[in-house]
Length: 130
Image (cartoon, rainbow, N blue to C red; front, side):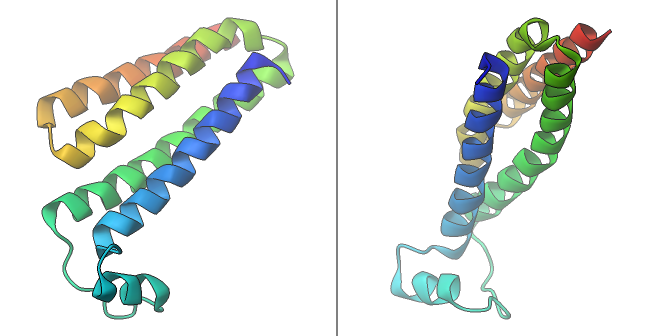
């Protein structure tokens, strides 16, 4: 497996963690009531705590960005420029690793700066394709 595809696998796992973390924090699944919500059809969700809502939004943002990342990573791999795109992919995934806790903790300006760093990583991948 190429290093770029290894980053794709890591980003896939990070996306899964974001989704699970979003659900756990949103539903407060460490409580009995939250566990019941998590195991239900979720037809009547209680209001999320501010942190739970941020975790849910961070998961949604991670999924949205994963789509962009995956398209660029696979295109770079198929085009044979995976090595040139690797640094951008690494910048992207490290930014996403920082982004999740920063967003969930509600650190607003830092969250935006880290998001921009991830976009810079995507731009580096686009430039590698050029």
